[in-house]
Amino acid sequence: MKFKSMTDEELALLYVKGDNKAFDELLARNQSKLFTYIMFVVRDQELANDLFQDTFVKVITKLQEGKYTDSGKFSYWITRIAHNVIMDWYRMQKNEHIVEPTEDNDLSNLNENSVIDISIESEIVNSQIMTDVKRMMNNLPTPQREVVYMRFYQDMSFKEIAEVTGVSINTALGRMRYAIINLRRMAQEHDILLKMEA
Image (tube, rainbow, N blue to C red; front, side):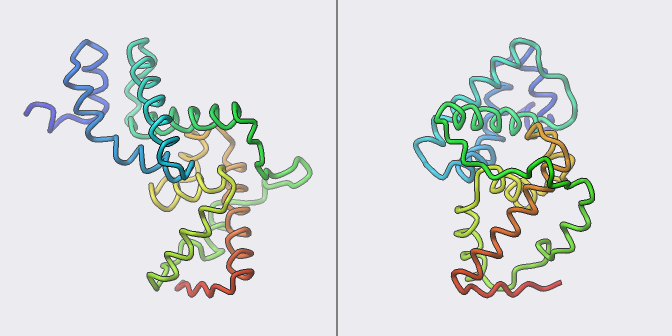
């Protein structure tokens, strides 16, 4: 089939020109990864389904309005749309229990390496530990959980995370820092030993 060898970006531009089958291929390629991301953030199957549908309606609308240009990262573009849909939903729910760095908490001295040095990038040795970590991650505030997911499950850089979520790199780093602090606190409270290799 002619679509198999095409990039997502080429398919998107083909769809803009009126080829609906190109969009079907785009959806098939991206739906699982995108749904997994949404589900990870909202932790509710029914809500994730709704937000997934809303996201693809927005993707179609933006494509048809010509708001997509081939930037080389279609998957990041749709992840950003999904992020915005999720945040809009949270705003509508007035669910603003988000712990953010305050203005007097200067995070400008943080850099990517200082976060990596906290050994979060280290391999998790044991599958039980991985289960514990995933369970604890579910208890993180949404913005922190999202950054952890993008960093470790989607292998995105902090620059890419900042672009996708529409925040500064320092805010993305700050969210990761708070996530690490919260994960460590939860591990101590629940007496979970996180044996990580450097």
